[in-house]
Length: 203
Length: 218
Image 1: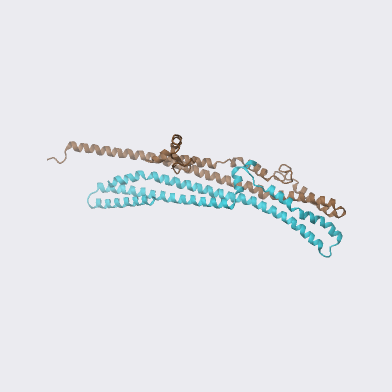
Image 2: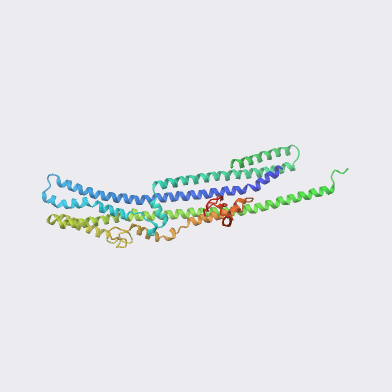
């Protein structure tokens, strides 16, 4: 009976072990893909938002330049001729902001699939920190899932090994006689109990 | 009195033989199923790893092209367009200011010359020629990005998801090879099952098994 139970465990346990191992591999692959996509989303989004921020800053710089020019004109020691020549430039620079801002908006607009841009690229560029946090949470869940499945596969592997040893010692107990048979039987029972405990730990 | 009756012993021996043969046959059958499942599991793992590799390649190419378009080429493009707008406005202001506009006109001409110098000998980028020029004086960065990605069309062909699905199909087959797992066997047949009985379980795309009553995920 002992040998039969051990045999049952040895023959039936590899199947759930394969399943747990497969789930681990899939979760690992999914988590790696999510991590790659997350880093790509952040890099693409940052590149475009940096361009928008820098071009907006350039627009502000031109206006600041115009204001500074007008301020300099008003300072004592500047001749009227020089002031008259500089004033149109100062006025132009101060009025440039809306036009430059418009340029920055047009050039920094987010691409969409309607523009013929790859859908994933559009999504990556349009991604915002909220999306990254969600992706990170998903990646963590996938890593946890891989850990759980990996532990299950390891425990089932251990159970198969213990059941195989229990099967061998149960056979030895059957062919031996006297004290050694009793010893082998105790060993088989212990190993089988270990195998069952390993299986129960995965439930 | 005989201790063992020969006829009865013969029957027991035959029963033992039968049990042993059955046990051997079951062992061989399960070993074959497990071997089949292991091979399919290996194929599934390989396909999933390939999908990760494809995703890494795609992501690297995507970052490279977006960075080329928005970090390397768009900033000089914007500066150029801004200089042109500034030069136009200064020229107009210089002309309307009469004698006081000479400095503005000189500044406008110097900016126009600077723009011409910046665009001189530019080749295959955002500011080269008028390919990406728009009516409002800006440059079409999105079209430039599309062209950069089209130049690497092979990398941008999305192969990661099909590979993931290939791995999933291997996983489903491996599940069929699991001895004594009627649930997974049902899962493979779930397309035909759900056609007949839509309210019954359907296969989850991630290979985790059937999902009772849920919408099909594949």
